[in-house]
Amino acid sequence: MSKPVMTRAAATLSAGLGTGLRSRAPRSREWLVIVPIVAVCALLPLIIRGRYEVGVMTLILIYAIAAYGLDLVLGHLGLVSVAHAALLTVGAYTLVILTTKYGVGYWWAAIAGVVVSTLAGLLLAGLTMRSRGHYFSVSSLAFAAVTVVVITQWTSLTNGASGIYGIPTPPGFDSTTALFYLSLIVLTVVLVAMFLLSRSTLGRNLRAIHADEVLAASLGINVVATKLMAFTVSAAIVGLAGPLFASWVSYITPSSAGIMEGFNLLVYVIIGGSATLAGPLVGVALVVGVTEAFRFTELYQTLIFSGIVFLVLLFFRGGVVGSVARVWSRVTARRRPPEADVVPAAEAETDAALLALPHLSPDDRGDPAQPGKVLFEARALTKKFGGVTAVSDVSLVAREGEIIGVIGPNGAGKSTLFGLISGVVGGWSGTATFAGQELNRLAVHERARLGIGRTFQTNRLLADETVLQNLITAGYLHRPTRKSRSADADDGFVDTILDLTGLRAKAGEVVSGLSIEEQKLVGVGMALAVRPRMLLLDEPFAGLRESETPRLMRLLEWLRDQGMVILLVEHKMRVLMSLCSHVYVLDSGQLIAEGSPDQIVNDPRVISAYLGTKNA
Image 1 (cartoon, rainbow, N blue to C red):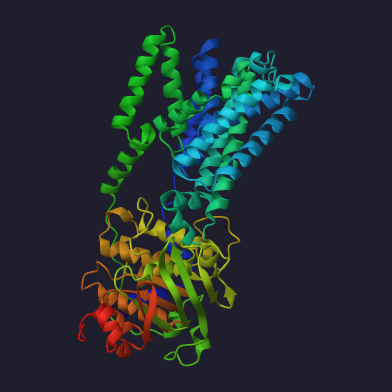
Image 2: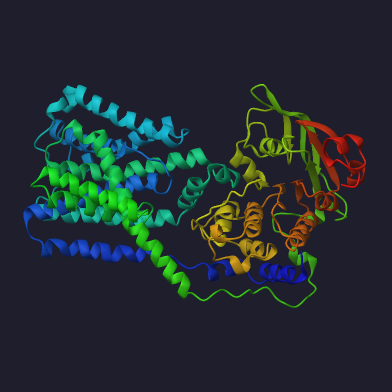
């Protein structure tokens, strides 16, 4: 690593940890959107006084609450659910049954409605969270269909297809206008909750999972538990709309839980713009407003509604609000002056002690030039895919302060071996221990939290977020202290990574706009943000220019000197042989040789299987 970069990293660590990150990360002002939304909505009944019109606006607010619940799953997690109308109806029926049949007070019944909706969502999530894509969508469709059947057939409790009349209104909110303002209060609470959630640990987890579940797990995120939590919170938000909907409609039937109602909620979110603070409300207002404006003719109502949906999907790919926000961000980005490269230009010596990474202890190894104690050991690792054995009886040992190479021809099993170690690939036999702990039963996120970081052969990044956001997302679960609930809290380690990887000047740029070389460095930076004790690098030099290779080589050598274990898969043999103290060679999944670089390049088996010539 070049001395200017090292000097800057030392200064970051020694000059008050935690100041650099916050000074560069702009505070989100998205919460300011809540103020005009609430203000405009509050003024509408004073301008539009018609009872029918106020009733329509109330319905818009109620549907918007439910749409925000759906958006937590659709926009932030990427799961298409048509079950949320059924969850809303479950909450509504709970209130109706408790108040009309058992004489329970309205507010207690409303709370029960939210609880029952939440439990129904938890049940659905528990049964389906391990499924993905269209499998989950079909499961949610089945849930909606089953809900309709249960409500229809349970006549002793729900009156079946006849429905239930005479639904009470909330005490103190008997008029249409009062119900409007009650709905607005609930919507305001939901808006604030959605904003806070997007800035929370859960919000960052959801965005990472949405982008790439494998990447998210490798960063230490418990994917299944996070999805389960998100869907449960989503169901609770929808549950808030259930009692309001029941009071507004005054007559409820099983059709409210139908599949078409679920599709309507999807349309609201998609038209308005998923994963935006104002999108679901705008989508509901647009769709319901157009539907009501042309209610006098069903034919033209359907044609106009379909036309609007078509035009929005054609010209506003991110929904109305999402597309506008994207254009606005581009405009503001052009106006923003470029960040200066703050890496010092002058060479300067620095005290190596200042550069010690806080989660490593190089001094414990004694002589830094010698490898330390065994950190990772694998014995007889074997993985079969059907009748194909990808890894067969492979054993290796890694000590602190050591770079170990893993080479072999394409298809030799190198990436599969990394998958076994990191947990991405399951169903293997053999034993593996890390820091004295058995890895066999640990999930991917548990291994990451234990101190195993990795990169991937093909870049896996949060492509729509900035370099800084990628590093924050990768590192915030692994801070030494996590007492703060803020997802932006940091101890300065991200600043250090920016300097060590040379990405400081690119910190505010979106990853998808970076070069391949820069994306490789972002991947390495994300792996470092996990604060690993062992780093698995899968072809990190692939695609790098010759001018970029020395920087990364110096970084790896510096990490080794800090006591980190590095397992390196690389096809650039001169780079690998100059970095590694020990090399393992795989061929067709089998370990055919191991030893020092000099021994490997002169081994006839290696020359025959991989190197090709003695001088390769």
